[in-house]
Amino acid sequence: MPDLTRVVVVDDQPTIRLGLRMILDHEPDVEVVGEAGDGTAALDVVRATLPDVVLLDVRMPGMDGVEATRQIRADPLLGDVRVVVLTTFDDEEYVTGALRAGADAFLLKDTEPATLVATVHRVRAGEQVLDPKVTGVVVGQWRAWAAGRSASEPAAGSGAAGAVASLTQREREVLIAVARGGSNPDVADQLGVGEATVKAHVHALLRKLGCTTRTQLVVTAYESGLITVGH
Image (cartoon, rainbow, N blue to C red; front, side, top):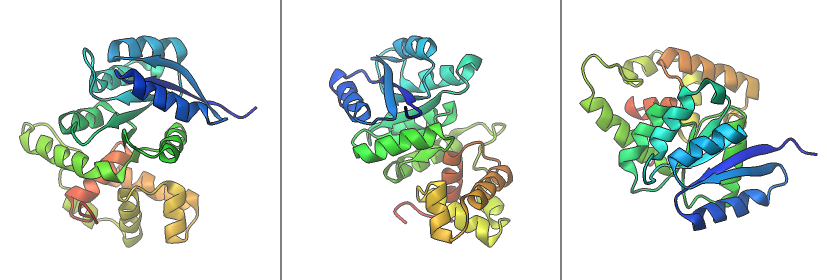
């Protein structure tokens, strides 16, 4: 028996839930253990099933995906649950909220099935994943939030250019590769180093740049000008 990744699917549209379930049920090492149509029901299902990963629509009636993510993160019993936010290009106003709430990954709803499955496994393994097609939305909304925050509220990307300038050349190369959506194995392949070396560099980047997630590393890379949207 393979080690199953247990997933809960949350979307207010039954046809989308069915499509996601069909994709995931096709995988021998993935098991869909629950579904929900809104954030409130999602919390009940997640607490009852304790999945590895939640695929969570960001825009839903009642409790949306942002608040559901926030409550999952606030519940100590759900500390091992990973959250993949499903979004569209029309959801800009929700994206920053989900990022700040602690989402582990962002994917467009029309993501290819293979990418969806790979993301589920990567997130369960502890990675944060940002679909490159969502990057422009995330960065734009993060900048809008940063511009409007109170002077006393620090931003993860504050002083990004100065912080990135202090990195070693290799750390900058790793940051660029991560910002382009590379997983640890992808980055290791690209740079010709071991995966353990990449993990060590990512940990160092998180510490040096004052970030808590891989997604915030991506935002910092864009805020600093190290990489630009579309690059």
